[in-house]
Length: 114
Length: 116
Image (cartoon, rainbow over all chains, first blue to last red; front, side):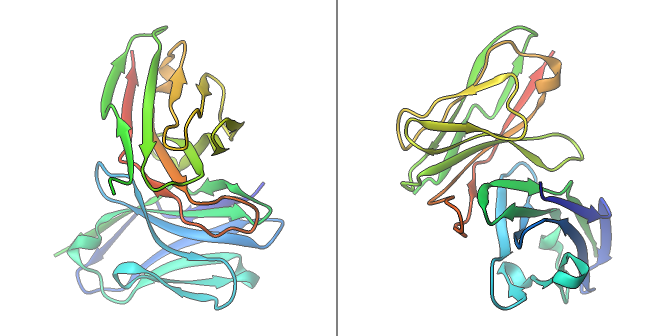
């Protein structure tokens, strides 16, 4: 079965600094990859997803991620952090042959310092 | 549209009690899912449904039951609550989860359950 590893349970950046949240996946078949954001006491909201085609995927709120097959990675970036970006971020992978079986990483909590 | 709604928001159960977590969606989605989220962990799939009358087990189904009598509703039943079921439960739905689909899953706000 596929799996996801998120490197770093907590990341802290200053407002205006680059945000980089790391995600590596394991899958025996070409995967679908997702990044979700969770604000306190709320459900998950999709930031972006990779299915096929262009490996650089742009999402909402200025985030983007690049699918790198050779590195089995799907890192999330944003050029300039905003205070409102403080949240928990989850990377997830699903199997193209069984799209209902989505596996989530443990999450990375992003803190943005003024 | 209200999207995906869940009730209750919070609940405390005693060991051995039973309860049903409610989930409803008004987006006419065929696929619905139940996840649990434990501290420091990602979400794990409990059960899912591909349409009314059809359900299937996910990664962690033990101790739970589901039913899907309508497209809109997908309740999760805990029969004999145990402390290991203390968690936050999320319901989600998508238009389609069929093979090759890329439809987004939409999540409800969650139910925080404590079993003492």
